[in-house]
Image 1 (cartoon, helix red, strand yellow):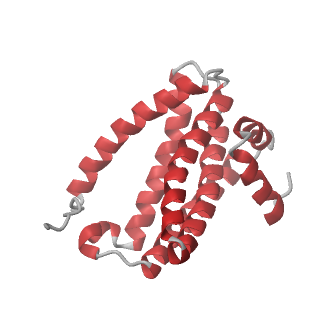
Image 2: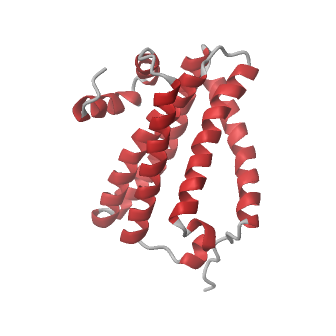
Length: 198
């Protein structure tokens, strides 16, 4: 595998139609755990920077975000916690369900997914300025791509044959995680968005 922009872009495009093939190619690199954790940290920094840029270009009222999410440093910590938690969940839950996957492959999964979604965020940001409707469609597509890639990479990592069962398990875990995160955010002072009364 070549770590050049053109090659990485081609691999990113191939991820959607052939996710398991791309997963096998990435897992076969045999990158060290230290290198992968460093790459994950880089993704956290880039994701936080992208959020800050998006807020500058299309600012959101701080009252809606709350004092925690409006702080870039705290936002970065939340990004990092999410990526770390997702990595451990991919590894640990897959193992509990009888999978044989490695922690290195779980880290690679999150790093690669975040790499793809940084590209989608850039595209969405650009489209928001020139074609808001297309930007909204891309945002919806990003949700589909997230679950599609996560399901196939997790199945490939642990040797599961049924991607559908992996998807159902991920969805159930995500629902539980959302409830838990909502509770934490309320404790941190993030209030629900109040829609204007007509």
